Length: 294
Image (cartoon, rainbow, N blue to C red; front, side, top):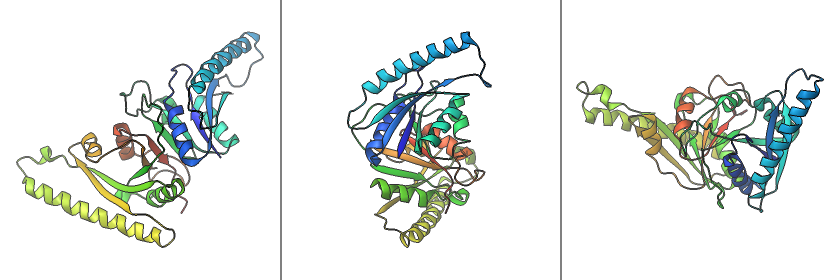
């Protein structure tokens, strides 16, 4: 099987290639590093346009070859330039053609260094893909590490997408540690003067206990079907989404897994509103999983 890495020849960003190599080192798969060249549709028999496309293909191939040449040699990486009507369409065409298990993409250049920001290409991809999409934070560097821990962001009652069983199966296949985290924003400033801080803390504690009980119940169901190692169950609370995400520890080799929103068709990626907020504040790579068929 194959991991597809999207490479932008115009931005020269190797972040998605670096993430794809790290994932492939974890899974034992090969990588296709793809640069998509956009062409008009329907195709026109125009020699000037044909000459221009040939030039763009040659330039993209040169830049891609240079990027692949400096990647670690322990992973099989094949460079490929592909023509399509759009970059998202081209990536999905290649994913189907090569039976890719996931697509690795990069952050928009407008995003903060070390964080993920969606651009026009990735925004469309997360609403149309039928396979997992992995996001490399802007500037994500090469690493000798494998993916050692998966963190599933549990959404409580809104978690109709089967994120926990899907992440548990992934952790078992990748021989990675597993933890389940539920993030919540508790803006105590909004209650200033109307609710005691001790009462707010009690609300948070009750919510945390209920959430942990719900997660434990799901894990017990999964354990009846498959072997699970010890799973850490945490809650991340803050006055805003950034504080909530940063309230738990993160380390090299972490991958945050987000589920698709309730509106997503089965086996299709669809980024929900809360997931989008968490994605933009994650300090580690993020994987968006399609709705679980189970």
